[in-house]
Image (cartoon, rainbow, N blue to C red):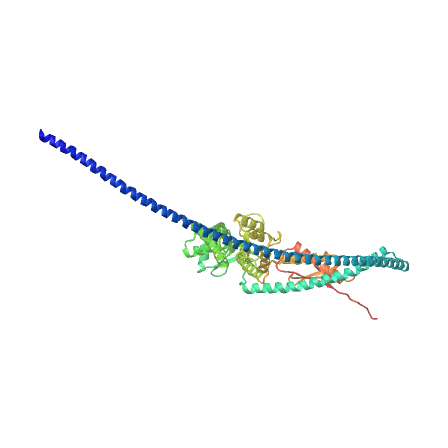
Length: 517
């Protein structure tokens, strides 16, 4: 019991002592912190005072610097203002001088204007005096001549008109001669240059084809029993088979070259096969027709390839190939079209035109002849329809329509194609013309010349290449002779169709005849 009391007492004493020690420690710590705080406060105050002094010094320095900058800027502005004021003063002085100069010039102009007015007035007075003198002279002339002014003018004008008409006619004749010489020279050079670059062999197809036979016995087999083979051949091919005394040969006659060619190939195939009877003839004829179609296409492709032309419809290629089996006055139509295409290309190149388009127009200009035996109408109209069907260029269509003068030419290429067509058709040996057509053309030429007033006789010479017109000298003078030549030329060009050119020569002959008795 006593121990517990002692323990409690010791605990109480320990608590009191601990509380006291703690209080003492806290008291001492508080004093120490208070002293440190005061020291820190004093140190902070010192630093604040120092900062205030430094800030005041910096503020004074900055203010001084700003003041110096402002003073410098003010001085610069003052200098600029002084310089601007100086320039303004100089400009003002210059303007004053210019104003003074303009005033002097205006004064001088006023003086000149016054002088001009005085001069104009003097001139007007002089003009009035001249008009009065002129009027007096005219009145005097009218009295002396007995003509007034209007009558004198009419008389002079009539004399001038009469004299000038002859001079004008003479001038026209000289100009025509010079133009003709120059045109002939240039045309000759152009045509010669073109034809030197393209020259084709002269060839003409005939209306018969000779088929060689291995022996004369083959003639009997071709004729057949009671002539049935020859009748079958003639019936299905549409040609005449002529068997005469010519050894080892038979003749196929037809105006259609395509039919004649098919008949030739069929007959040669029969001869090689040896089996000649109506059924075999029909079989070989059908096979030949199919092969001929391919051959026609090949002809068309070969020509377009040689000319360097592309983009043709297959149907148009076949139509071009058919021209190989058409002729015009004995001239092969495909060869003629090829010539025209070549010449058109050369002429177009010489003139700076589209060579490819000219060749295309030249090749297709007679395309209507390939089917003119199948379709009604002229080969020109048929050719235009074919070209439109295959959507050819408008220049090509116009060249086809105008190459015979039926339609006006709308482009240089159309004229070139017409020229090339005439060159190809009129060259020596190109065509065979019948005697009847030849005589008819010569008669028509002479009739055209004889219809003109003042013409005595007309003669067509040099195979119709020249027309000589003999005029009556008492009715026609030299100038009238030139007019007659032009009139004959225009009538021939408008009323006739002919290859090449025709020269018109007007002859005026005056004879003085006397008889000595």
